[in-house]
Image (tube, each protein chain N blue to C red):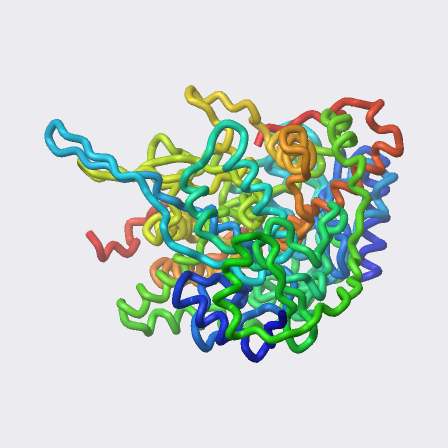
Length: 284
Length: 346
């Protein structure tokens, strides 16, 4: 990884110097050992602040979307970041020619406090970037991942009352900080339904009903577009198992419409954004 | 007087028969102040709890009044808080924070009766810190981790017990009920604490004021997600929004925590937003913590507990903001004085 970091700095220096990029989005070290934080590099003088190590836990894919200028943005992309970029391209959130993607095959990131690989990385199905302009390092063989629907299967086997109690317990703990929404690469609405106070879709009260409304509506809204990047779970200050909900939707979509991998490219229509005459319509 | 650690649970049990006793407990893998339950572990040994005791005085959602309309008649019923509570094992960062909440809710023209009632019904038992976390920096704001200002009773760890002293009249009175559990004993010398994080905050207010228009805020706010994690884990953040839940002819009006980092926080009628960008919102957060509050009340609204540092999803670190702005000032950056990078709306 030290080599990747060196190559990254070297390329960043050249790309900024020759004017290919206006700025680059990567990571820098935080105050504590193993702590990192996203970083914007605008000048060659700052290039040595860039790091790449096993603690670069933040997804970068969403950051360029806020910039509505014509600036050329460099982004360091691993599997998850690259899929997020594809999703944004497919959704028309940014133009491909405004991005310059430095791909890095990812070995998986670690929790700095425990030293263990992050849950989201253990469940990752795409460690290699699926889109990039240049690749730093060699593509990795995708390692086998544990059955990522195991938790969903376990919950599905519970009775309806048990399932209700389980999710009631989860959502009773939600503090509605909205970090899961704000970090989510599928959440790109200019104005979120939860913020449309005058329309009243989402009450401001923290109560079980309102918290459930928040979490479940969000789950359906992200739907099959979820990249399984696991950022919602990583950022949740209460440690809620939000990916179990997202995976339930993904599993259902797979069963109803066949396997679909969000963000694998920037053009394949997703099962829920179009219809076919032979679609399942058991509810009609 | 000394409270032997082996008598701690007996004391808490006795107190819990008369009041709701909030103690640091580990629930769902995280420490926070929760009602004492017989037989459950009390986490007094650890440094700060992941979540502060703020919600015991200023709940995230609190009903202000209920209303009902029947024909021509409207009845209003205001909430009255009458439950006695004890906050047990509160660290100095959090007692300092409660003093700041007191200033906001109980001084300067408006007295918040809901807060006042809770505050009057609350006995605060502070516990001196024995082991600061990596992100603790209360001493940088002049807070003494061994002495919880504003508390009623101070506990000091003596090894196998806690030295107990009353700090207020209310504390002295409360200690009468503690006497069966106390033994004679002397206070041991306060343990020397090592803080790995120590900052010079003497000029932070000036620095922030002079760097108000600096480009620093653009790149810092770029990585901010605009969520409310920092505000919700902060022991001093006290902004709230009021709303109502109306069902036919009845309903209730309530308030909930709000965060200045939310995009709808400063939204006004007619959809004018005086802080329309993430940069302005995040800058406001730091300005309020480290400058504006001091203008009004003369003290820092950051207590150095470091909770936001630990939990910010984007790794934004208020201690680094303090350092960064200080070094920018040192480099004469205030002379540059402009947001060199164009703000992006988000």
